[in-house]
Image 1: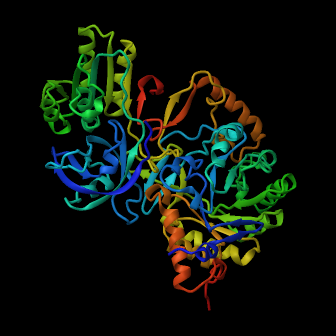
Image 2: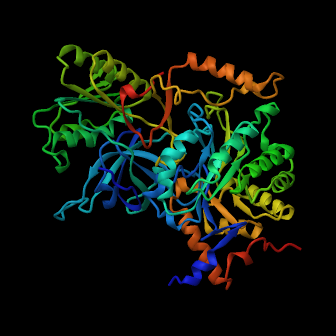
Length: 310
Length: 322
């Protein structure tokens, strides 16, 4: 039997925010929530993070946009999205009815884009917080990724912090030299939490035609294949910052999620597992609950960062 | 009618090789069969391992709603899918055995629909793409309850094509419905030598086509040709598209297809920053603006639609054929 204590045991604090459990749906894998509302009870999720949003609508990349790889998949969707205006008028009213906290993932190509998005979304009813996707080219810095440069990450984060008091989680890219430095830059800039990892850059080739399988040539690798990479980076970042970490990358089962918590994450996001197992987030919540009971733990907090190393 | 998709473990009740190229898999799954519509699809997860990782989409080739009275076969209800071995997923599928359970998610997407006032119904299929037309033919013929009075006045014409006799299916099933299919194969091993679109053109030229509607499924090249013919003769046409998919429910945006979006500036906007931007010395924003302006004037307006959600059945003229 499930008791009230079991529910309490799953609660977590993400900086200033309280969530009923540590399992979030990752951006880009869950649409605007409604796509999965007919399959699973969204009320049971810790939160959902919506598809990456930009000021203007984006059409996305030419197909093919998907390539399956061993224990993973490459995607090159190209950040297709409805744009801020349509999001506020069409998507948000429906998101408010889903019954679970909503984080809005935003991206831009200039610091001003990010600030403008944050200004217009920060205090809107029905939005619990923002997730900042910094894996985008900074057009004013020669097109290199914000995510790859600690200075840019600090600037974006600080600028958003000036603009809004809203909860801000900065999502890091694994395609960088030193992830800890990037995480520290986000923390210094005023991030309330850090989520990692975004996808790894990958390529799949059709050898018969010697052409890339993806229309965009390269894409982002996700799925069980990247779990060890995500775990190592979460563990590394956990040594470097004080703000809570939301771990993601290849989580498909409760055991995967527990690994991330033990490595130092306070919460996790489920991503491409939704595609092959729509009930994965619910199974993970149940599995974590069961683990806590079996190991006689009264809360998630005793697990976070509990990795035993010599 | 909108119905919720279900994820269930269906029981394999029959698995046959129907030609050297094609297989038919019959699955008992009453929860899905109850609401399934011709043209809709399911996504199959082959096992709990991660390779292959993703589900595979298949359209229904037969829908067997649960029967009120218990009888032989699939009294509980289920469906059949047909497939061709094209990769690791379908290669694995051939090893599924009767009695095994398989994880299926569906029914998904938008199926075929009736066109008001159209009494001459042409169903044209190529290769494995014939399969999704079979339950639609059955419903239009009105043998099963779902057809809402059937199509008494309607005339149904079935045009089937394939590379050769091994890449063609459904002839026997169509005949069982009391219909006589016209058949063409590229090598002439069955029916007339030629393609299904040859049959279609001949058909439309020969007869008055004012009350005609076309339903098509097959390889992309064939569908583009069917769409062209339909436009030429001004006949409404529905096409069932295939695509790589990850989620099947409209969330991942992986199964993009170009949809005409006439003159709508906002949606017709080319989006991704041009690749030449990275590392160039000029002001990237200026280049971006200029290049975008150039692209907007050159490209026809379109947006990307989701095959899994807005389709897989589309009106042929919705699609930007290239």
